[in-house]
Length: 174
Image (cartoon, rainbow, N blue to C red; front, side):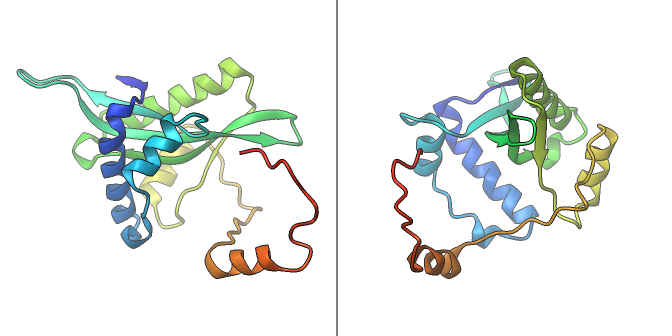
């Protein structure tokens, strides 16, 4: 079953983010706290959203979160429409093969179609062949002509402090 995340899901989402980071060999970079996730997902102005995949309850136990998708809206100046950017998709190892990943992606595709969004995009690590094969089986196409760039840490701070960085802009939306 796929459902929209609630504040009670934050500990499970946080745990799964850490599991994903470990799988991606980057656990030391996963610094988000449960408090940050709670604010981003359920604060006064949420700008990121999450879906939860659950497995049916066993006798004496409630349904168990076995996966999640964390996403936000992006925008294409070429199509003039919003889209969905999938930040994280994760299904716990014991639940893989049960259709949860496909169901999470299908729900996000449904959101796109329902809202008139023309694009649904995400990144995948070059070495993650199982995921690449899965995505291709759904009809997703790698964007091989594009290279992702990132500015973070000291280079980000240096550029922000560069002459003209304030540029007179004001009223930045958040």
